[in-house]
Length: 477
Image 1 (cartoon, rainbow, N blue to C red):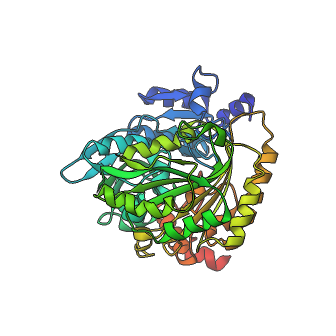
Image 2: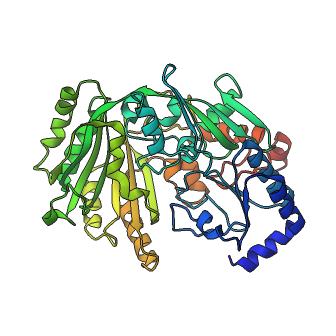
Protein backbone atom coordinates (compact mmCIF):
# COMPACT_ATOMS: atom_id res chain seq x y z
CA UNK A 1 0.00 0.00 0.00
CA UNK A 2 1.45 3.38 -0.99
CA UNK A 3 1.38 6.61 1.00
CA UNK A 4 -1.20 7.94 -1.50
CA UNK A 5 -3.47 4.97 -0.73
CA UNK A 6 -3.10 5.60 2.97
CA UNK A 7 -3.85 9.29 2.50
CA UNK A 8 -7.09 8.43 0.70
CA UNK A 9 -8.08 6.14 3.57
CA UNK A 10 -7.29 8.88 6.03
CA UNK A 11 -9.66 11.18 4.16
CA UNK A 12 -12.49 8.99 5.50
CA UNK A 13 -11.08 9.95 8.88
CA UNK A 14 -10.99 13.69 8.31
CA UNK A 15 -7.75 15.58 8.76
CA UNK A 16 -9.44 17.52 11.51
CA UNK A 17 -10.37 14.31 13.34
CA UNK A 18 -6.84 12.96 13.03
CA UNK A 19 -5.32 16.18 14.31
CA UNK A 20 -7.89 16.24 17.10
CA UNK A 21 -6.70 12.76 18.13
CA UNK A 22 -3.17 14.10 18.35
CA UNK A 23 -4.35 17.03 20.48
CA UNK A 24 -6.43 14.79 22.73
CA UNK A 25 -3.63 12.38 23.60
CA UNK A 26 -0.42 13.10 25.45
CA UNK A 27 1.30 10.16 23.73
CA UNK A 28 2.78 10.12 20.22
CA UNK A 29 0.35 9.83 17.31
CA UNK A 30 2.42 8.96 14.25
CA UNK A 31 1.26 9.39 10.65
CA UNK A 32 2.80 8.42 7.28
CA UNK A 33 5.47 10.96 6.45
CA UNK A 34 6.52 11.52 10.06
CA UNK A 35 10.25 11.11 10.59
CA UNK A 36 9.94 8.01 12.77
CA UNK A 37 7.03 6.35 10.92
CA UNK A 38 9.14 3.68 9.14
CA UNK A 39 11.12 2.88 12.28
CA UNK A 40 8.05 2.46 14.49
CA UNK A 41 6.07 0.33 12.03
CA UNK A 42 8.92 -2.16 11.71
CA UNK A 43 8.40 -5.42 13.64
CA UNK A 44 10.43 -8.54 14.44
CA UNK A 45 8.69 -10.28 11.55
CA UNK A 46 10.06 -8.66 8.38
CA UNK A 47 7.93 -10.86 6.11
CA UNK A 48 5.18 -8.25 6.25
CA UNK A 49 5.83 -4.54 5.82
CA UNK A 50 2.53 -3.02 6.90
CA UNK A 51 1.66 0.65 6.40
CA UNK A 52 -0.87 1.68 9.05
CA UNK A 53 -2.71 4.96 8.57
CA UNK A 54 -2.22 5.96 12.20
CA UNK A 55 0.08 4.61 14.91
CA UNK A 56 -0.79 5.47 18.51
CA UNK A 57 2.19 4.89 20.81
CA UNK A 58 -0.02 4.45 23.85
CA UNK A 59 1.24 5.20 27.34
CA UNK A 60 -2.01 4.88 29.32
CA UNK A 61 -5.19 2.83 29.15
CA UNK A 62 -6.96 6.04 28.13
CA UNK A 63 -4.69 6.28 25.08
CA UNK A 64 -5.70 2.73 24.15
CA UNK A 65 -9.40 3.49 24.59
CA UNK A 66 -9.19 6.72 22.56
CA UNK A 67 -7.35 4.97 19.72
CA UNK A 68 -10.05 2.32 19.63
CA UNK A 69 -12.83 4.91 19.56
CA UNK A 70 -11.06 6.73 16.72
CA UNK A 71 -10.83 3.52 14.71
CA UNK A 72 -14.50 2.71 15.30
CA UNK A 73 -15.67 6.22 14.47
CA UNK A 74 -13.80 6.22 11.18
CA UNK A 75 -14.39 2.63 10.14
CA UNK A 76 -10.69 1.75 10.21
CA UNK A 77 -9.34 -1.70 11.15
CA UNK A 78 -7.55 -1.93 14.48
CA UNK A 79 -4.36 -3.83 15.32
CA UNK A 80 -2.22 -4.12 18.43
CA UNK A 81 1.55 -4.59 18.63
CA UNK A 82 3.21 -5.73 21.84
CA UNK A 83 6.33 -7.75 21.00
CA UNK A 84 5.89 -7.72 17.22
CA UNK A 85 6.54 -11.45 16.72
CA UNK A 86 3.15 -12.11 15.07
CA UNK A 87 3.71 -14.92 12.55
CA UNK A 88 0.82 -13.79 10.28
CA UNK A 89 2.03 -10.17 10.48
CA UNK A 90 -0.97 -8.85 12.38
CA UNK A 91 0.94 -6.45 14.64
CA UNK A 92 -0.02 -3.69 12.20
CA UNK A 93 -2.51 -3.56 9.31
CA UNK A 94 -2.33 -1.61 6.06
CA UNK A 95 -4.48 1.51 6.31
CA UNK A 96 -5.53 0.78 9.87
CA UNK A 97 -5.08 2.21 13.33
CA UNK A 98 -2.16 0.51 15.06
CA UNK A 99 -1.91 0.63 18.83
CA UNK A 100 1.78 0.32 19.63
CA UNK A 101 2.24 -0.87 23.22
CA UNK A 102 6.03 -0.61 23.16
CA UNK A 103 5.92 1.69 26.21
CA UNK A 104 3.73 -0.74 28.14
CA UNK A 105 6.62 -2.76 29.56
CA UNK A 106 6.57 -2.19 33.33
CA UNK A 107 7.26 -5.24 35.53
CA UNK A 108 6.51 -5.29 39.26
CA UNK A 109 7.48 -8.40 41.23
CA UNK A 110 6.04 -9.14 44.68
CA UNK A 111 8.54 -11.63 46.15
CA UNK A 112 6.36 -12.36 49.21
CA UNK A 113 3.32 -13.41 47.17
CA UNK A 114 5.51 -14.73 44.33
CA UNK A 115 3.51 -12.72 41.82
CA UNK A 116 4.32 -10.28 39.05
CA UNK A 117 2.27 -7.54 37.40
CA UNK A 118 3.52 -7.23 33.85
CA UNK A 119 2.54 -4.97 30.98
CA UNK A 120 2.09 -6.64 27.57
CA UNK A 121 5.16 -5.32 25.73
CA UNK A 122 7.54 -6.52 28.42
CA UNK A 123 9.37 -9.44 26.89
CA UNK A 124 10.34 -12.89 28.08
CA UNK A 125 13.93 -11.95 28.78
CA UNK A 126 12.98 -8.87 30.80
CA UNK A 127 10.56 -10.83 32.96
CA UNK A 128 13.07 -13.66 33.43
CA UNK A 129 15.67 -11.18 34.69
CA UNK A 130 13.25 -9.33 36.99
CA UNK A 131 11.87 -12.54 38.51
CA UNK A 132 15.29 -14.17 38.82
CA UNK A 133 16.39 -11.42 41.19
CA UNK A 134 14.07 -13.11 43.71
CA UNK A 135 14.73 -16.72 42.69
CA UNK A 136 11.49 -16.89 40.70
CA UNK A 137 10.46 -17.59 37.10
CA UNK A 138 7.55 -18.05 34.72
CA UNK A 139 7.41 -20.23 31.63
CA UNK A 140 7.34 -17.78 28.72
CA UNK A 141 8.70 -17.50 25.17
CA UNK A 142 11.58 -19.44 23.66
CA UNK A 143 13.47 -16.21 22.79
CA UNK A 144 14.11 -13.22 25.03
CA UNK A 145 12.41 -10.77 22.66
CA UNK A 146 9.01 -12.52 22.65
CA UNK A 147 6.46 -10.09 24.12
CA UNK A 148 4.18 -11.29 26.89
CA UNK A 149 1.01 -9.97 25.24
CA UNK A 150 0.54 -12.29 22.28
CA UNK A 151 2.43 -15.14 23.92
CA UNK A 152 0.13 -15.30 26.93
CA UNK A 153 -3.14 -14.96 25.04
CA UNK A 154 -2.24 -17.98 22.89
CA UNK A 155 -0.97 -20.21 25.69
CA UNK A 156 2.78 -19.91 26.21
CA UNK A 157 4.82 -23.13 25.81
CA UNK A 158 8.17 -22.29 27.38
CA UNK A 159 11.28 -23.77 28.98
CA UNK A 160 9.64 -24.95 32.23
CA UNK A 161 6.25 -25.99 30.81
CA UNK A 162 6.52 -29.66 31.79
CA UNK A 163 6.99 -28.67 35.46
CA UNK A 164 4.84 -25.55 35.78
CA UNK A 165 2.48 -25.69 32.81
CA UNK A 166 1.80 -22.99 30.25
CA UNK A 167 2.06 -19.25 30.81
CA UNK A 168 -1.75 -19.14 31.02
CA UNK A 169 -1.76 -21.82 33.72
CA UNK A 170 -0.03 -19.26 35.93
CA UNK A 171 -2.20 -16.29 34.98
CA UNK A 172 -4.11 -14.76 37.90
CA UNK A 173 -5.84 -11.79 36.29
CA UNK A 174 -5.73 -9.34 33.40
CA UNK A 175 -6.63 -5.71 32.91
CA UNK A 176 -8.05 -4.98 29.49
CA UNK A 177 -9.90 -2.43 27.41
CA UNK A 178 -13.06 -3.89 25.90
CA UNK A 179 -14.49 -3.25 22.44
CA UNK A 180 -16.71 -0.61 24.06
CA UNK A 181 -13.70 1.20 25.51
CA UNK A 182 -14.31 0.12 29.11
CA UNK A 183 -11.40 -0.83 31.35
CA UNK A 184 -12.14 -4.02 33.29
CA UNK A 185 -10.28 -6.71 35.20
CA UNK A 186 -10.89 -10.38 34.48
CA UNK A 187 -9.98 -13.29 36.74
CA UNK A 188 -11.55 -16.48 38.04
CA UNK A 189 -13.74 -14.27 40.24
CA UNK A 190 -14.47 -11.38 37.86
CA UNK A 191 -15.69 -11.82 34.28
CA UNK A 192 -14.77 -15.47 34.75
CA UNK A 193 -16.00 -16.62 31.33
CA UNK A 194 -13.93 -13.91 29.65
CA UNK A 195 -10.95 -14.95 31.76
CA UNK A 196 -11.41 -18.52 30.51
CA UNK A 197 -11.44 -17.30 26.89
CA UNK A 198 -8.39 -15.07 27.30
CA UNK A 199 -6.32 -18.10 28.29
CA UNK A 200 -5.75 -19.45 24.79
CA UNK A 201 -8.32 -17.57 22.69
CA UNK A 202 -5.83 -15.05 21.31
CA UNK A 203 -6.45 -11.34 20.88
CA UNK A 204 -10.14 -11.69 20.16
CA UNK A 205 -11.65 -10.09 23.23
CA UNK A 206 -9.90 -6.84 24.12
CA UNK A 207 -6.62 -4.98 24.40
CA UNK A 208 -4.64 -6.20 27.40
CA UNK A 209 -2.88 -3.52 29.41
CA UNK A 210 -1.64 -5.67 32.33
CA UNK A 211 -1.18 -9.31 33.30
CA UNK A 212 -0.83 -10.69 36.81
CA UNK A 213 1.09 -13.95 37.06
CA UNK A 214 1.89 -16.50 39.74
CA UNK A 215 5.64 -17.11 39.68
CA UNK A 216 7.43 -20.37 40.48
CA UNK A 217 10.48 -20.90 42.71
CA UNK A 218 13.15 -21.29 40.02
CA UNK A 219 16.65 -19.91 40.42
CA UNK A 220 19.63 -22.06 39.52
CA UNK A 221 18.81 -24.70 36.91
CA UNK A 222 20.76 -27.45 35.18
CA UNK A 223 20.58 -26.74 31.48
CA UNK A 224 22.02 -25.25 28.34
CA UNK A 225 22.66 -26.89 24.97
CA UNK A 226 23.52 -30.43 23.97
CA UNK A 227 24.32 -30.79 20.26
CA UNK A 228 24.18 -34.25 18.67
CA UNK A 229 24.53 -35.54 15.11
CA UNK A 230 21.08 -35.56 13.48
CA UNK A 231 20.27 -39.16 12.57
CA UNK A 232 16.97 -41.04 12.66
CA UNK A 233 18.20 -43.14 15.56
CA UNK A 234 19.37 -40.12 17.58
CA UNK A 235 16.13 -38.17 17.03
CA UNK A 236 14.09 -41.25 17.98
CA UNK A 237 16.02 -41.76 21.21
CA UNK A 238 15.74 -38.07 22.06
CA UNK A 239 11.96 -37.91 21.52
CA UNK A 240 11.30 -41.12 23.43
CA UNK A 241 13.28 -40.02 26.47
CA UNK A 242 12.31 -36.34 26.57
CA UNK A 243 8.60 -37.23 26.40
CA UNK A 244 8.82 -39.45 29.50
CA UNK A 245 11.54 -37.70 31.52
CA UNK A 246 10.79 -36.27 34.97
CA UNK A 247 8.57 -33.17 34.89
CA UNK A 248 11.51 -31.01 35.95
CA UNK A 249 13.07 -31.45 32.49
CA UNK A 250 11.70 -29.45 29.57
CA UNK A 251 13.44 -29.39 26.20
CA UNK A 252 12.97 -27.36 23.03
CA UNK A 253 15.02 -28.86 20.24
CA UNK A 254 15.95 -27.75 16.74
CA UNK A 255 17.07 -29.94 13.87
CA UNK A 256 19.28 -27.46 12.07
CA UNK A 257 22.61 -26.81 10.43
CA UNK A 258 25.14 -26.14 13.18
CA UNK A 259 25.56 -22.37 13.46
CA UNK A 260 28.85 -20.55 14.00
CA UNK A 261 28.22 -20.33 17.75
CA UNK A 262 31.17 -20.09 20.17
CA UNK A 263 30.52 -23.62 21.49
CA UNK A 264 30.39 -25.30 18.05
CA UNK A 265 33.77 -26.65 16.82
CA UNK A 266 34.71 -24.80 13.65
CA UNK A 267 34.99 -27.99 11.60
CA UNK A 268 31.38 -28.96 12.55
CA UNK A 269 29.74 -25.69 11.48
CA UNK A 270 27.09 -26.40 8.84
CA UNK A 271 26.64 -30.05 9.86
CA UNK A 272 23.05 -31.22 10.32
CA UNK A 273 22.58 -31.48 14.08
CA UNK A 274 20.05 -32.00 16.81
CA UNK A 275 20.41 -28.95 19.09
CA UNK A 276 18.71 -29.80 22.38
CA UNK A 277 18.00 -26.78 24.57
CA UNK A 278 17.30 -28.17 28.03
CA UNK A 279 16.19 -26.82 31.40
CA UNK A 280 16.03 -29.01 34.50
CA UNK A 281 14.36 -26.92 37.20
CA UNK A 282 14.72 -29.16 40.24
CA UNK A 283 16.61 -28.11 43.39
CA UNK A 284 19.40 -30.70 43.16
CA UNK A 285 21.94 -29.98 40.41
CA UNK A 286 23.48 -33.44 40.78
CA UNK A 287 20.03 -34.91 40.09
CA UNK A 288 19.77 -32.59 37.09
CA UNK A 289 22.99 -34.04 35.69
CA UNK A 290 21.64 -37.56 36.28
CA UNK A 291 18.36 -36.75 34.48
CA UNK A 292 20.24 -35.28 31.50
CA UNK A 293 22.67 -38.20 31.26
CA UNK A 294 20.42 -40.37 29.02
CA UNK A 295 20.48 -37.58 26.44
CA UNK A 296 24.26 -37.36 26.70
CA UNK A 297 24.40 -41.12 26.18
CA UNK A 298 22.56 -41.00 22.85
CA UNK A 299 25.72 -40.26 20.85
CA UNK A 300 29.11 -38.60 20.97
CA UNK A 301 28.13 -34.92 21.14
CA UNK A 302 29.14 -32.24 18.70
CA UNK A 303 29.03 -29.92 21.70
CA UNK A 304 27.97 -30.21 25.33
CA UNK A 305 27.44 -26.98 27.27
CA UNK A 306 25.03 -28.36 29.86
CA UNK A 307 25.56 -27.47 33.49
CA UNK A 308 24.32 -25.42 36.45
CA UNK A 309 23.34 -21.90 35.43
CA UNK A 310 20.90 -19.09 36.31
CA UNK A 311 17.58 -19.70 34.55
CA UNK A 312 17.73 -16.54 32.33
CA UNK A 313 20.95 -17.81 30.71
CA UNK A 314 18.88 -20.21 28.59
CA UNK A 315 17.98 -17.19 26.45
CA UNK A 316 21.61 -16.76 25.44
CA UNK A 317 21.19 -19.88 23.28
CA UNK A 318 18.26 -18.41 21.32
CA UNK A 319 19.75 -14.93 20.86
CA UNK A 320 19.76 -15.17 17.02
CA UNK A 321 15.94 -15.38 17.09
CA UNK A 322 15.77 -11.91 18.66
CA UNK A 323 16.97 -10.26 15.44
CA UNK A 324 14.32 -9.15 12.91
CA UNK A 325 13.99 -11.79 10.20
CA UNK A 326 11.84 -13.14 7.39
CA UNK A 327 9.95 -16.35 8.00
CA UNK A 328 7.49 -18.91 6.70
CA UNK A 329 6.09 -21.18 9.40
CA UNK A 330 3.90 -24.30 9.45
CA UNK A 331 3.21 -26.32 12.59
CA UNK A 332 1.06 -28.88 14.36
CA UNK A 333 0.46 -30.87 17.51
CA UNK A 334 0.56 -34.64 17.39
CA UNK A 335 0.72 -37.78 19.48
CA UNK A 336 4.42 -38.29 18.88
CA UNK A 337 6.36 -38.56 15.63
CA UNK A 338 6.91 -41.70 13.57
CA UNK A 339 10.26 -43.04 12.39
CA UNK A 340 9.10 -42.50 8.81
CA UNK A 341 8.34 -38.84 9.53
CA UNK A 342 11.73 -38.39 11.19
CA UNK A 343 13.46 -39.91 8.16
CA UNK A 344 11.60 -37.63 5.76
CA UNK A 345 12.22 -34.60 7.98
CA UNK A 346 15.97 -35.20 7.98
CA UNK A 347 16.01 -35.72 4.23
CA UNK A 348 14.27 -32.39 3.62
CA UNK A 349 16.43 -30.63 6.21
CA UNK A 350 19.48 -31.80 4.29
CA UNK A 351 18.24 -29.69 1.36
CA UNK A 352 17.40 -26.55 3.34
CA UNK A 353 17.26 -23.42 1.19
CA UNK A 354 18.53 -21.24 4.05
CA UNK A 355 21.24 -22.09 6.60
CA UNK A 356 19.02 -20.57 9.30
CA UNK A 357 15.94 -22.73 8.69
CA UNK A 358 15.07 -25.55 11.07
CA UNK A 359 12.60 -28.14 12.27
CA UNK A 360 11.56 -27.56 15.87
CA UNK A 361 10.55 -30.41 18.19
CA UNK A 362 8.87 -29.92 21.57
CA UNK A 363 8.03 -33.04 23.60
CA UNK A 364 5.21 -32.07 25.96
CA UNK A 365 3.51 -33.93 28.83
CA UNK A 366 4.05 -33.36 32.54
CA UNK A 367 2.02 -30.55 34.10
CA UNK A 368 1.16 -29.27 30.62
CA UNK A 369 -1.05 -32.32 30.15
CA UNK A 370 -2.58 -32.49 33.62
CA UNK A 371 -4.65 -29.33 33.40
CA UNK A 372 -8.28 -30.28 32.65
CA UNK A 373 -9.13 -29.58 29.02
CA UNK A 374 -12.09 -27.37 30.02
CA UNK A 375 -9.99 -25.23 32.37
CA UNK A 376 -8.75 -22.88 29.63
CA UNK A 377 -9.42 -22.13 25.97
CA UNK A 378 -6.11 -23.83 25.18
CA UNK A 379 -7.56 -27.31 24.78
CA UNK A 380 -4.72 -29.47 23.42
CA UNK A 381 -3.74 -30.93 26.78
CA UNK A 382 -3.85 -34.48 25.45
CA UNK A 383 -1.15 -33.79 22.85
CA UNK A 384 2.34 -34.95 23.67
CA UNK A 385 4.34 -33.40 20.85
CA UNK A 386 4.63 -30.12 18.95
CA UNK A 387 6.36 -29.72 15.59
CA UNK A 388 7.18 -26.57 13.64
CA UNK A 389 8.74 -26.15 10.19
CA UNK A 390 10.59 -22.83 10.37
CA UNK A 391 11.79 -21.30 7.14
CA UNK A 392 14.01 -18.41 8.25
CA UNK A 393 16.15 -15.92 6.33
CA UNK A 394 17.52 -12.42 6.83
CA UNK A 395 18.11 -10.91 3.37
CA UNK A 396 15.22 -9.05 1.72
CA UNK A 397 16.58 -9.94 -1.73
CA UNK A 398 16.45 -13.71 -1.16
CA UNK A 399 14.02 -15.87 -3.12
CA UNK A 400 10.96 -15.89 -0.87
CA UNK A 401 8.91 -18.41 -2.91
CA UNK A 402 11.85 -20.84 -2.78
CA UNK A 403 12.04 -20.67 1.01
CA UNK A 404 8.27 -20.93 1.34
CA UNK A 405 8.11 -23.99 -0.92
CA UNK A 406 10.86 -25.68 1.08
CA UNK A 407 9.04 -24.98 4.37
CA UNK A 408 5.85 -26.49 2.95
CA UNK A 409 7.81 -29.58 1.93
CA UNK A 410 9.29 -29.92 5.41
CA UNK A 411 5.85 -29.64 7.00
CA UNK A 412 4.41 -32.16 4.53
CA UNK A 413 7.06 -34.62 5.69
CA UNK A 414 5.42 -34.88 9.11
CA UNK A 415 1.89 -33.53 8.72
CA UNK A 416 0.32 -36.99 8.39
CA UNK A 417 0.87 -37.24 12.16
CA UNK A 418 -0.80 -33.90 12.90
CA UNK A 419 -3.67 -33.39 15.34
CA UNK A 420 -4.44 -29.73 15.99
CA UNK A 421 -2.32 -26.60 15.89
CA UNK A 422 -0.92 -24.07 18.39
CA UNK A 423 -2.57 -20.73 17.69
CA UNK A 424 0.65 -18.80 18.40
CA UNK A 425 2.41 -20.64 15.56
CA UNK A 426 -0.41 -20.23 13.05
CA UNK A 427 0.09 -18.08 9.95
CA UNK A 428 -2.46 -16.76 7.45
CA UNK A 429 -3.80 -20.26 6.81
CA UNK A 430 -7.57 -19.85 6.57
CA UNK A 431 -10.56 -20.56 8.76
CA UNK A 432 -10.18 -24.35 8.66
CA UNK A 433 -6.79 -24.08 10.31
CA UNK A 434 -8.14 -21.66 12.95
CA UNK A 435 -10.73 -24.33 13.70
CA UNK A 436 -7.88 -26.85 14.19
CA UNK A 437 -6.61 -24.68 17.02
CA UNK A 438 -9.79 -25.31 19.02
CA UNK A 439 -11.89 -28.46 19.45
CA UNK A 440 -15.55 -27.99 18.43
CA UNK A 441 -16.90 -27.43 21.95
CA UNK A 442 -14.10 -25.01 22.80
CA UNK A 443 -14.67 -22.99 19.63
CA UNK A 444 -18.41 -22.79 20.30
CA UNK A 445 -17.77 -21.50 23.82
CA UNK A 446 -15.27 -18.94 22.50
CA UNK A 447 -17.83 -17.75 19.94
CA UNK A 448 -20.33 -17.21 22.75
CA UNK A 449 -17.81 -15.16 24.77
CA UNK A 450 -17.00 -13.20 21.61
CA UNK A 451 -20.71 -12.44 21.16
CA UNK A 452 -20.84 -11.12 24.71
CA UNK A 453 -17.72 -8.95 24.69
CA UNK A 454 -17.21 -8.14 20.99
CA UNK A 455 -20.52 -8.78 19.17
CA UNK A 456 -19.52 -6.62 16.18
CA UNK A 457 -16.20 -8.47 15.75
CA UNK A 458 -14.27 -5.23 16.12
CA UNK A 459 -11.10 -7.17 17.05
CA UNK A 460 -10.18 -9.00 13.84
CA UNK A 461 -6.39 -8.63 13.69
CA UNK A 462 -6.01 -12.09 15.17
CA UNK A 463 -6.77 -15.72 14.44
CA UNK A 464 -10.38 -14.67 14.38
CA UNK A 465 -13.16 -16.21 16.40
CA UNK A 466 -16.43 -15.03 14.90
CA UNK A 467 -19.12 -14.08 17.44
CA UNK A 468 -22.00 -16.48 17.78
CA UNK A 469 -24.97 -15.03 15.95
CA UNK A 470 -28.14 -14.29 17.93
CA UNK A 471 -30.68 -17.14 17.85
CA UNK A 472 -32.99 -15.17 15.54
CA UNK A 473 -30.20 -14.70 13.00
CA UNK A 474 -29.23 -18.38 13.17
CA UNK A 475 -32.83 -19.40 12.39
CA UNK A 476 -33.01 -16.92 9.50
CA UNK A 477 -29.80 -18.31 8.05
